[in-house]
Length: 334
Length: 300
Image (tube, rainbow over all chains, first blue to last red; front, top):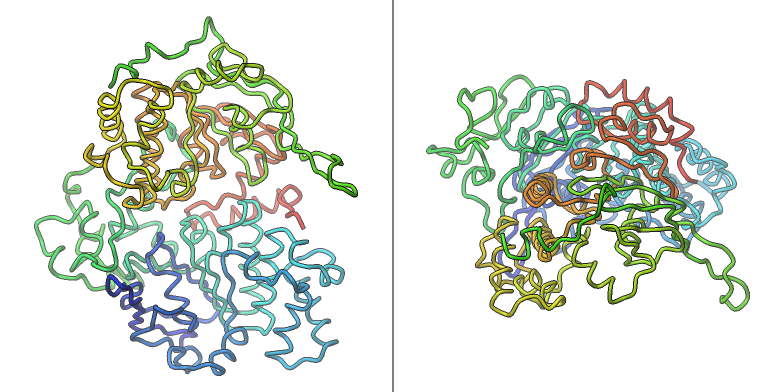
């Protein structure tokens, strides 16, 4: 059985202007010890998807349908204390900004031992000893001494390491990392990503990493989900997604990326995607990418919503014009 | 495009001196301390002896991580911050010792595009007023000519000229950055400092803006001092690259050379740290990073 099975998850936000369908029918599963990358641009619903799984969606948002079954229990149905027991204990979570996730008035030690005592019922001494081990595990130098420091004495990268230590302190089977390196410099990011990779193997954790950065998913994830306008538009193994992207959006996104390696970069132009993502108050009626798609022509793109279908084993795409079924050049090729 | 934009009014350098010559530039910020906090106890050396040149029509990419001094360098070039020491020569004139009046005239020729398209546009002004404000400030033309300039500028950055009566809140991040670029173009400058112009934008929008900046450079012969932290973005824009670390330029050269054959250990580590969108190279990249472990050691 999969570690996490998400089925037709729907999270809507009620606003004065109407209902925003931030997550609109998302289904995926995560196997034990696998790393899944969810990638997409701002507002595509990637963060709301995991917040929904964790029961952390704030009003006016609400999970209006679907399920997220983790170790036999549907997280969407859990309430209050039950959910708290799962969160932090069986599922660890780290966020983008390590500065705002830590309490500036408490020492790192206090914040680490709090979790250990709350979830594992350790006494003070046990918790302290374990806290030092955890800081060592995330490679914080002089762990014993740093335990009594306040967060402002830590650099951004080290704070994110502390967040990771807290997240893994109860040996969770699932770690959710929401843009864990977005606020960090590139040299620090590399270290944090390598650490996640290492811990995933040691602890046999399933990991969901959410990012807008195609490079980050390429260097970490086994499987990748691409989201657009509240829906999954493509899902495949990392290798197959980058080797043979099928969705016109994924394809365009990869070509829009500036490259650090290659020739003629300065003289060339990037592939740009015209327009911008749809307003989720009033999304396009059928294919949500159709208005920006280079291949949407005189067909059903604007009338029949495409299903997420398996185009080859393990590779799913939501488009009537996937790359491998396309012979001709794009309509109005740029 | 307009009378002001035909290049005739632009400052030009005599002989072979590059458009911008920065020599031994330093910017130190004092740290106040002591019992009554009025004594300078030390300095933050944000920019520490930096020299570079930018030729007319070319892009110098200034790349570095946060706190490397790249943005401060850009601000010192424009004299938005007063350098502590050193020389900034623009179009053959020394800016650091220039009078305010003379500096005002020079500013027509050097503009800036800011990082945050939300904070850098006045929400109470129409797009037309924002874009033509530089003309008003420099007392160029009359109301009618400024209005038609604004329309032309909007067209240049890919907008419908009818947008002049709209307000910034009606536009997305990428569109606002176009407005910021149109404003920077209003006085037909020869140099634009681009300070992280796409770091707040999504990939698909980022590509639109980078392409626009390239097109405008080709069309108007602009020189860019392109300040950014993203090595891929800097590479796509730049003819030459200067890598900054702790206030100093650690390596400088043609973009191709710096990226394919970096000589400085910090540049090498920085390039090894960039995630490459190719999962087939994951193992190789990780091994490469281990080689630079000492340089990549995080601040604690």
